[in-house]
Image (cartoon, rainbow, N blue to C red; front, side):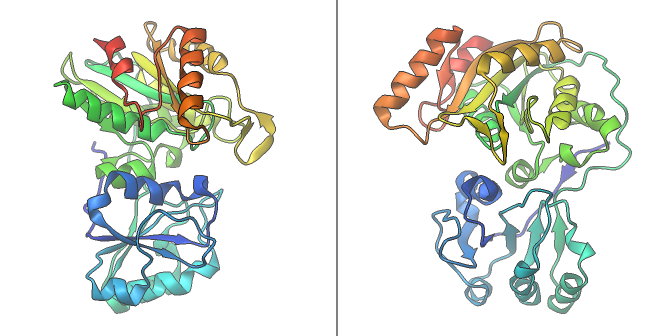
Length: 337
């Protein structure tokens, strides 16, 4: 049994479409932020679309410059492909550019895309396809150590926190690996399991496959999904937590966010509520589970506000509190050694 692995042709053109909301363009931003050396440009269908900081590039120019893969960098709730995208995606496929997506709608389920790919001898690559024959979780304790990132909501930094932890731990000489559980993480790492596409009975089993037994001092840094207080995605968060058997977890939060993104009738839970519920659920498979830090996306704050906010949280919860993209994560890592 292996994780899903992909070898994508570079360089990449990131397709933003007409999506203006940054949280719904997180796939494109994630790839651009963590694999900038592979990204040559972005393709936006209108001027109001999210800007990833890459050069704007039409399909014709991308083809001339040898783009290997067009990565669909946005996702609607439910993971569909709007009809308004198809002309552009077909143009790229006919030009010989592979189309890569991590949506619930399979690229190869769309006849016009299949025809375009056949004409251009390009590939349609669906990232969001879990491996076959995933078992039901055994619950048997595995060797090695595991840290899971959990969140007060979706799209606020669970993946970035895990990736920065990997980077910082390796810099400190620690044995650590990022374990991708979503389409963006898989595109960045080249391997992983798209947990939210796994049939419910097998989610925890997939989490066991994602972070198998390892050397005693090895850390798997598992990318969290959803949120255990989320009205739409709590189920996948619950299954991932149980199967991960996390020794440690980091709570991720977005400063200033008060409502669940896209579910405005639901308030964001407090960090303390997330800590308590994560321990209550996670202790089913690891009685030693503990919170080792708080990771905050502070994009909404200026430098002075950020420092005060992080200091207040650290004082309130007695835990190191960082913005991983500004301060790094070494204060959290000290809790692991």
